[in-house]
Length: 67
Image 1 (tube, rainbow, N blue to C red):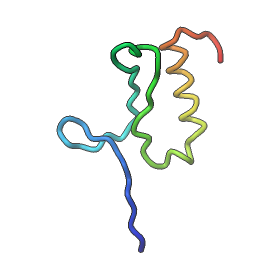
Image 2: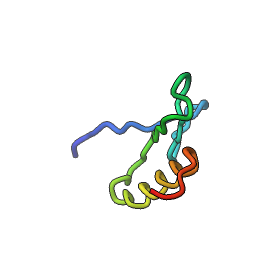
Image 3: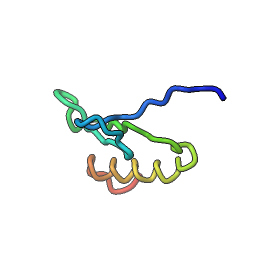
Image 4: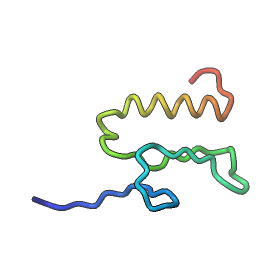
C-alpha cells in the first residue's frame, strides 16, 4: 500500500511521546500563548475531547472563568 509521513514528538531518550505537549512559550511570550504540540492519531476522531482539554488548559493558564 501507499506510504506516508507522520510527525510525532520524541522525548529526550528518543522514545515516541504518546500524549499532547502543552507549552506556554519562552522569552517575552512566556505565559501569553499556549502551544499544543504532538497531536497523535486519531486526533480527528477525538477532536471534541481534545478541544475540551485545550479549553480547560486555557482557562487554567489564563485564569479565565468561562469561555
